[in-house]
Image 1 (spheres, one colour):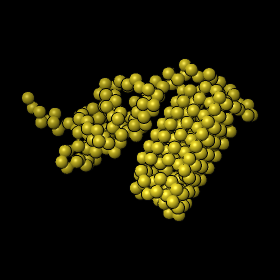
Image 2 (image 1 turned 180 degrees about the horizontal axis):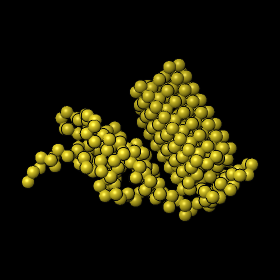
Image 3 (image 1 turned 90 degrees about the horizontal axis):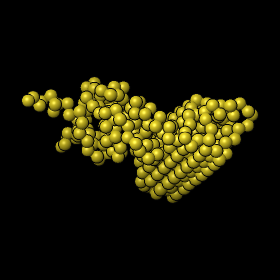
Image 4 (image 1 turned 120 degrees about the horizontal axis):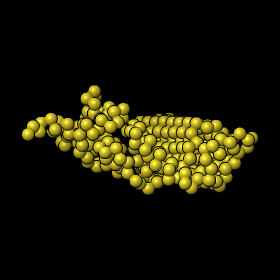
Length: 298
């Protein structure tokens, strides 16, 4: 039996400290346009750990077994809302478009059972001059690519809502529950999120200039590449949030919690960071020029 080719196709992965063993075929066949397929296509030189031969990827390995099972069998796992949000974020990072669609569809089917209105209802409502959905349950519905500027969603249940590429400028989300919602590339300039729950929400690439996020729960949120210039983040909880490459120029983070927050490559010029604990934040490559860091813990 010739085992040479089998061994050469094996891949050892170290995902944030968790070890996995798979094959090149598994990583490249089902999702050929993914980041993993590109990494192991043979077109790029891979860096291996010198002692073990593992390829290290700096991501949380908690859900990587689900990713491998998807690539092997094409079956997505049944998970809780919070775990599904985490897996969706990993699928987005690895550019696993098939898995992302399956997870989104699953969440939509689960949440729409409880939603009080549909996308069509929303479209009809926004034709009026002033729209309020205060306290309404809109969980899981697709509101992507709509013009919802100036709409009042305060106190609403917006769990797992799809706001991708939606215009939400000057919208109000005061004390809303938007856990796990998708705001990818949405326009959120001057929005009010005071006291809102956005745990696990995806806000990558969003425009959040001058948005008010004071006292908001932003735990596990993804703000990769987001524009947060002059945003108000006082006392916001950004624990485990991913702000890599985000623009926080002039943002006010007084009293914000940044435990394990990823601020690598972020622009923090002239940001207000007085008395903020930065000791557990990741600031590699961040621009802190002109930032007010009086009393900050580093």
